[in-house]
Length: 361
Image (cartoon, rainbow, N blue to C red; front, side):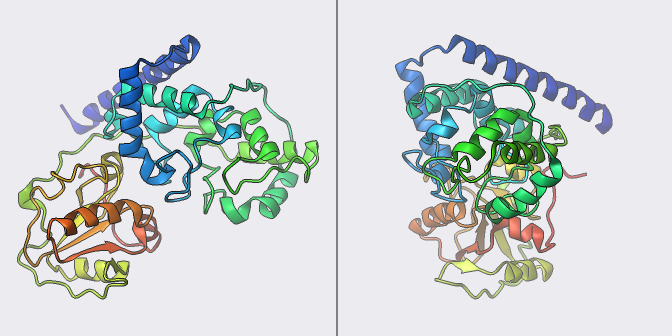
């Protein structure tokens, strides 16, 4: 079978999976079936394992990477179950919110994701607010001006997200209705920096702003990827015959990304750990990096890693939370030459340093 045939076949399977996924979420939302005690316990365990690092142990948000509060009434009462579950399953492309569905390379089954979404809605404890599905009309030019004035400081000049979520994200806009966006503008998000604008802007201005944000969408079409095999322990060390690099650490932990890039360019010996979710590693990673996700158990974190003078450098998107967690586990086990890329993966990309996809050509 040729690669193009395999890719086409995989693409077909992927979109069937997506439709099946959404259909099941919609069915679960209609049934609104209560969770069993076992399912609720499983959901809470998965939350603490995969989500608490960024969203907080009690769902309060902003534990890392400006992740939103999952207790906020205005968020959890208006976010439909299919929106919440798809966000967990397929993530938000180009943000720190990774896809967690197993078929995208993540660690969770479809049932686990359904159960977690239902549990989050239940724990939030807010009655669902039914919002209109009708489109909202507004003036795009006025909306663009308002966005720069009122939103860009936190959401970014191109709505790419800075300290607040990316609004130009196609996965977000594929599920967020106009009414959902408008409600957030009007009422803000409790327990976050997102304030309510209903007393600052007129209804027409809010409609203009809503219409502008909606105009940023280009549809959601996640590119299916074949999942590559994970590296073998024999391949963990990059340039095993090379010299050890010299790093200058901040706070005895953080290494500037330019020093890591230089070490790679000069073929120095080191190990790179991608501590994001495995699905993110499949999508793109620093050349030579091996996936050691932050949710790995402490008894498995060191498997296959050299315990000698080889430098072990971790990175994540946050830019520190996930990589700090893994490095802490390794240091606890006696690994000495360990560090975290200070600026994180997104800044590595923005600086033009090399990355590769998980599936080699």
